[in-house]
Image (tube, rainbow, N blue to C red; front, side, top):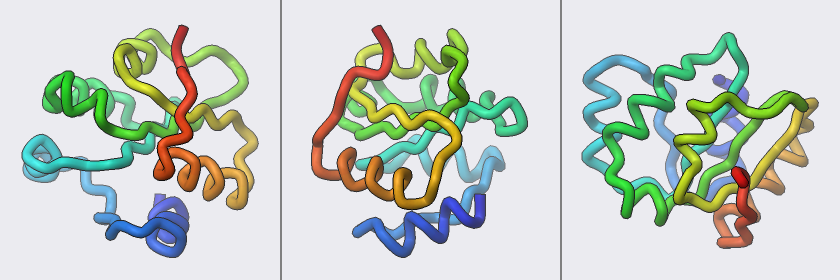
Length: 118
């Protein structure tokens, strides 16, 4: 995740907070407007965070966010599909090279979004 933060800090226009999954941090996420959400679906990553974000972000605000979804070639989990329902997102399939990820973030930031869930 440090590499992900480095890439975003280097190439994204907005400041990026260090990933912190504490309850206090998630409370702060619920009170802010974010223009970009990156969802990584690897089993080793805290998918519970996605459920927490889904619960805390009101549906209208979630629809306004750009979403980049990084996942393995297999279909994404039902929890991720539920999170994406009502959003527009860029889909990035593994293996992810840094240039491809940065391009996805750029496209999402520019509003060039494609449906990620059918």
